[in-house]
Amino acid sequence: MTRMAIRFGTSGWRGILADDFGFDGARAVSAAVARWARESGPGSRVVVAHDTRFLGSRFASAAARVLAGAGVRPIRARGPVPTPVASFAVRRRRAAAGIVFTASHNPPEYQGLKVVAPWGGGATEEITARLERWAAEVLASRPPPETEPRGRAVDLTGPYLEHLLGHLDRSRLRRSGIRVLYDALHGAAAGVLDEALRRCGVAVDVRRGDPDPGFGGQSPDPIPERLGSLAREVRKGKGLRLGLATDGDGDRFAAIDIDGRVLSESAALALLVDHLARTGRARRGVAISIATGSLVERVARSHGLPVRRLPIGFKHLSRALVEGEADVAGEESGGFAWGRVARDKDGILAGCLLAEIVATTGAPLGARLAALEREHGRSACGRMAIAADEGARRGLAALRSALPSRVDGARVLECDEKGGLRVTLDDGFLMFRASGTEPVLRIYAEARGPRLLSRRLRAGAELLRRAGR
Image (cartoon, rainbow, N blue to C red; front, side, top):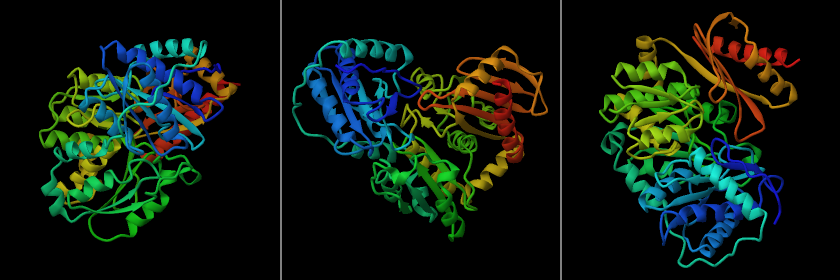
């Protein structure tokens, strides 16, 4: 078989289609998943799904044949589905694992797969290390046997929607009269998030809801640069309204306030934590990544909720949900989960709960956010990406060995190298980390306001550039 490097990052194995990701590798990983699934006993089942990316259906069919050839029963999704739907199906059907063909928010030329563990969250590093090793063994030998699986593809979306709707305040949403403008970015959450809200009596207008493997020529990433048109429509609308967007596979989200402002991920997470705590639906605690803004932590602690900061990668947060250490989890890149509904990031759930906040308060999201900032202090948190070229890598290595005492005019308090280089400052933080899914180096920062945040991100990029000379 063809030799290729199969390496799982923070959220699965991804690569440029045909160059880094192909059918030989997908079959090898599927064979490795089958081997892992058989450890749970005879008659093991594995959910197989795909989003709207190019060749997703063919990759899923190949995986199903490999699983069947290995004596594992594949549960095939009917048509493209969001990753949260597939993750829920793994739990609901008590499957041994799940394979979802998706490259999430990556550019259209990428394809990938994510392995879902039995608890409905991403496979841990220990598991993926085994899968990498076994897949390499398959690639070095004969192609795995394939058998046409029995049975038809099944509807995974219906049960997910029923479960989600059972945990929303449908009557409050129905009475609110809010209008949601939703941009699906041509991804798999179209027809799921909007359907959930419509079943709650909410008027929803959908943009870019048609499936497009090219995603309109852009990355299906709900960042401000991609949401200008939606922001303008929200701003010029009438009545109580909210803008929502999800990424290619529906696990990330973005929120746009009534004035057209795209809320930062940390601000949206603070609102969600506050809402679940106020309504008595968060009691155990909150798990957040080390790159998440401090407003989330201050809001959580004001409700008496303990907070755990964990390495970047939602699989770490998922484990906190599974082990009962938290019932809410979130990260800096638009990932959110509430354990009663999801144990992995779920942009559909987040969007519905944000609409519920507006319905409950009878005011735009910004009004509640302003109240939180008055009570707990302002905080602006964000990120940027630069090419992971030789200079950037050299700069990161140099900073690890010798940090200045001050950065962007702020005093350096401490340095943590778990999962990246995180520099705690006396008024926020600055963090550098190589992406696990794209050839970029990410810079994360927190400051006391949006303008200071922009300056800090630029200062971080300049610091990295100078260190790499």
